[in-house]
Image 1 (cartoon, one colour):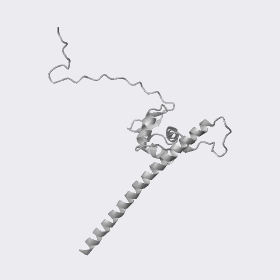
Image 2 (tube, rainbow, N blue to C red):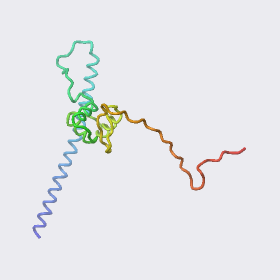
Image 3 (cartoon, helix red, strand yellow):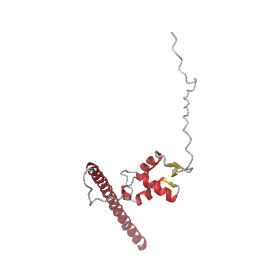
Length: 165
């Protein structure tokens, strides 16, 4: 039975290592979120400072080219869909994030989904959650408001009798 004890010891050691790694990963994710927020705030301050000094001479130290991280995530998403075709919104977010897109949220894929669903450049494809560019496609049919049925009770028609005088 010594082999069983050795295996149990190995299992406990592996579980302890896994718990330690998960703890470090959670701490690193927290640090990454904080750093991402800091960069976004500093970028916004730099942009505000740049717009305040538009009349001044251009600063040679500031880059003038637009980098990928300066693009809006919707623009990155449109670029990716143009290259790869229809994608599920979670895969689309993974690619946007890989290319430097930043959204400060607990669920950035859901935020991206909200943004592209409100943007006329995108359309929803047949499978749920899959989006594509709407370039040259027929405009979507207008949404028809459906009347909701009034729920009726067991006995009556659901109408309240008018009071009689």
